[in-house]
Image 1 (tube, rainbow, N blue to C red):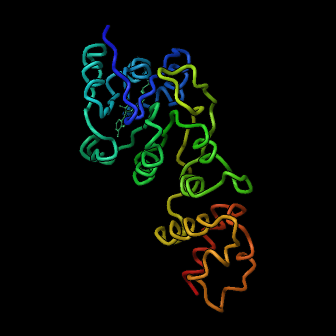
Image 2 (tube, rainbow, N blue to C red; image 1 turned 180 degrees about the vertical axis):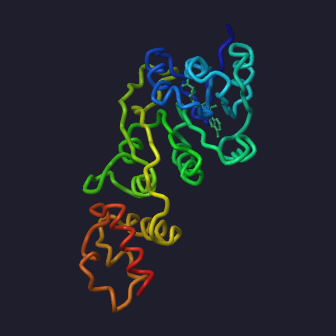
Image 3 (cartoon, rainbow, N blue to C red; image 1 turned 135 degrees about the vertical axis):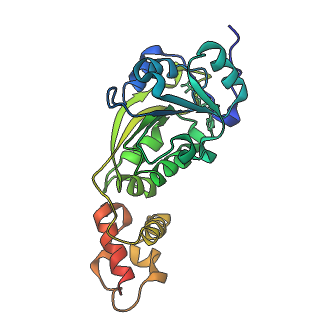
Length: 256
Ligand code: SAH
C-alpha cells in the first residue's frame, strides 16, 4: 500500500492509533441523523469509523491531492471533496439551511480559522468536535479567571459550550508533531443573539485582550468618554470578565 507523503505546510501529522481515532469519531452523537463534514481526512484513519457510524451522511473535504487519490483508492465509497475548507461554500455543499456536524483531526496551523468559520455558520452547526493543539484547546475551554482565557475563549463560548475531552500524546502520530494534542467538543448553547452589537463586541474583546496586562481603562481608552470612564469595570483586567460582562460592557460603551 503506497502511503501519502506527509507535507508540513499542510499540517499533515497522521494519527496512527486506532483507539484514539475511534474515540474521536465517537465524540459526535451517533444517531441524530445529521450530515457530517470531516475536515482534513488525510489517509482516512478517522474517516473509516465515521463512515461506519454515519454512512452516506458523511462528506470529507481534503486539500491535498495525494490524500484525495489515496482515499479514492482505499475508501472508495466515501464522498470526498478536493478543496480548501476555508474557501468551501457551505450553502452549496449542504443546500437549504439544515444542520450538520463538523469533525476532524484538524490541520493545527489553521485551527483558529476553522473555528471562526464554524462560528460564522453557528446556526447550522450544533456540534463541532475534533483534535487540535493542546494549548489551543486549553485556551478555547478556559473560563474567566484562567490565565489562558482570551479572545477565542470569549468568542467561541458566547455561542458554544466547550468540553475538553482528552489529551493525546505526540507519539501516536506519524510524523510526530512538536506539540501535544487534545480533543474538544463544542456544543451550541441556547444563545440566539448576543444582546449587543456583534461587531462592536468582537472589537472590544480583541482590544481588551491585546493588552491583557493593562486595565481595560487603558486598553479601551479610545472608546471611553467622561460619562463612563469612572465605571468600576474599567479597573478590571479582561481575563476576569465573563461573556455576559463583555456584553454589558459593549452596551455600556455603545449607549453612552
Ligand atoms: N485526519 C487525518 C489527517 C490529519 S493532518 C489523521 O488524523 O491522520 C491534517 C489534514 O488536513 C491533512 O490531511 C491536510 O492535508 C488537511 N488539510 C490541511 N489544510 C486543509 C484545508 N484548508 N482544507 C482541507 N483540508 C486541509
